[in-house]
Image 1 (tube, helix red, strand yellow):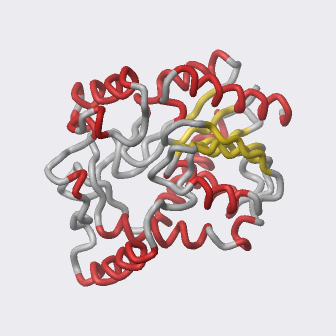
Image 2: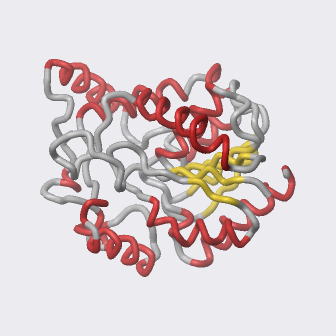
Length: 275
């Protein structure tokens, strides 16, 4: 049936997706996945291994292109379905815009095409990011929710903003407790600036019009990390897009069973219509 090129969001890792991977395998797909630089069990880029860092989002773009060409092209059967969650959705969409023939289909789950932050915070993040070029780009960005914490395993379920499913939340945090090398909490000044620069680029209509592959946007209506309404406006400029609004938090495929069922219904419908 082809290959799902599955890419996770910031702080995430391959092991977290074992349930989703199996569900795609059960549908007859191959699944290819890797941990982005600086997270999961990929090499960390700075001495503080519990802070997410990248000097430029172009580094993500570069490594994704290299893996597609040098690893996936020879072993992953076509058609290729690029699927990304959150930051992974941002980077899948970026690849689809830069190299339009890469993916036959695209699925974006609560993608980081936008950030749910105010304009003053956005401008402040850009200014701090520019100042950080003086020598402290790998310093922590001030985030009260991550102060003193290594990762999600130190956040109580009641304070999490990504899922309403307690069992799946605990399942993920147990994976991190079993191997704390998986833990990522806050972000650096550089990561903050680069994410703002990338989402600003994505917000331009001229960028969105580059994506020609049939695309499914899975929009989480209770999302507080990305902006669902802005994501919809951006995706409406894609050449061929289907938009599914699902009443759930940011991690739709890590949500309660009823929400996951609705999410899978939309994925299955999209795949059946386009393959």
